[in-house]
Length: 186
Ligand SMILES: Cc1cc2nc3c(=O)[nH]c(=O)nc-3n(C[C@H](O)[C@H](O)[C@H](O)COP(=O)(O)O)c2cc1C
Image (tube, rainbow, N blue to C red; front, side, top):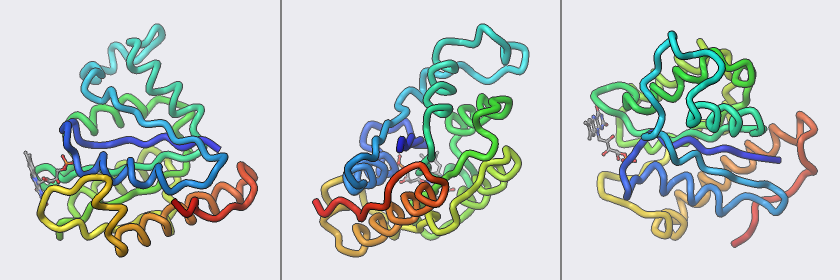
């Protein structure tokens, strides 16, 4: 089973990236997690260039999406919406036939607002992705900067992420992607 994570933040010390890294450390053996980390290298979406040969970074993103059984997204909220660079990446996936029906988990690094989550849900539904509802997980990070280690050390956050892993794997098992396995007890 292959999981692709998409982080909506370009920040070097992104808490959303930390959430995705922490999630990746909890998956059971046999589950491969890849991170798409070239969000900032994608060209601005333009329907005039949404044809083969596609820009190299777009081809790379689409190939990763095509080979992923599940996408796991964590994104910040910017001015009550999705960050522009992240929406840009989603726009490049609109015409990608591999995206329709793709299972998606959302790790919502909640800071008390749900504009970005609501917007993401609307965009994904419009793009015909299949949101795994049991893997839409609000994570009460609090207002301060937090890194991967601190997330895994916080019992409440760790349990929520383990629940997300179980939901993602259970969904994939239901689709016949992997044999049943509990979260890795690291
Ligand atoms: C330009 C900008 C706009 C933001 N707008 C909002 C907002 O509307 N609502 C909110 O809850 N947080 C907002 N924030 C705070 C970010 O969502 C928060 O800092 C988040 O942790 C950033 O994610 P990251 O750590 O992964 O980069 C904004 C931050 C920036 C830089």
